[in-house]
Amino acid sequence: MSAADLSVRLGAMTLANPIMPASGTFSEDLADVFDLDLLGAHVLKTIMRGTRAGNPVPRVCDLQGGMLNAIGIPSKGIEDFRSRMLPYWQGYRAPLVVSISAHTLDEFARLCAEVSLPGVAAIEANISCPNIEADGNAFAMRPDTTAEVMRRLRAETDLPLWAKLTPNTGEPVAVAQAAEANGADALVTANTALGMAIDVRTRRPRLGNGMGGMSGPAVKPIALRMTYQCARACTIPVIGCGGIATLDDVLEFLIAGASAVQVGTATFQSPTVMARLVAELGDWMQAQGLASLSEIIGSVEMPEGEAA
Image 1 (cartoon, rainbow, N blue to C red):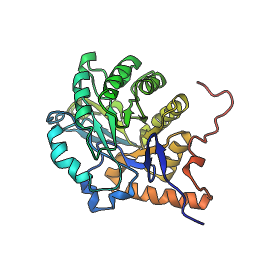
Image 2: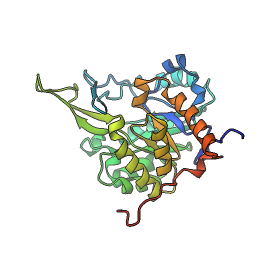
Image 3: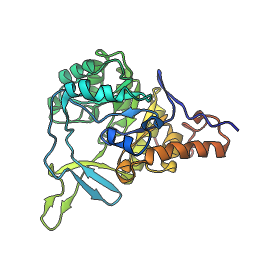
Image 4: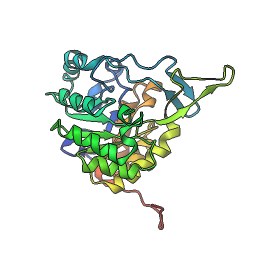
């Protein structure tokens, strides 16, 4: 029997397989431990236009079921991306996805135009970061601000545009539909869930920023639910992200409707986890006698009377 076809379509893009890193958890250092061209795509750490030091330390703390971080998107800026990062990643076959973010609409739009360069396959718009024009709320918290930022970004680039959404909203479907209606070619569900941890001995937060983003296995049910809801409500591809560490995790997201997945926190625990998942997914497809991932994507069977 021939090898299973692991390729997936994300709009105009074709990936060799559905496994890719989550932004902020991937760097060139991983090239020392596995062949990075084994991945379906490379998603870079979020960049901003100017240099940014990030949040005060401590920035990370371990929790039961995951981790909490308040990194603050440290960035060396657009010039470092152009001169150093882009030439390096152009040496790989896997498509390059550049994650961008900004605190205002004008900054976001300008950065989107500036990273629309040869060698960039897609832009992931991290619209989950605070918007200082909306009292610090993330663009993706509400449908109207999601629509506004995606419309501005779409006007600045012809590249595929992915919208990275947040679980910290009570309107995930409406936000996803607003992103699709205003130019998103794919959705990433989702960024970290806002959380907090306190050191009971000092009575101070365990993060220097007070609060941070929860990631890891504990958030998987939330991200999986959001992936299912968005895949059902939208026609563009959905990329699942949140707590993925095992083959079963990957399969759950695909069955729920994701066309691809991003792996984040698990890479900190096992740097070769993504390469292992690609191999395990191929072996599983072969053992099941499945020729294509299209046979399982969105194949979840919900009970009758499922709640909306």
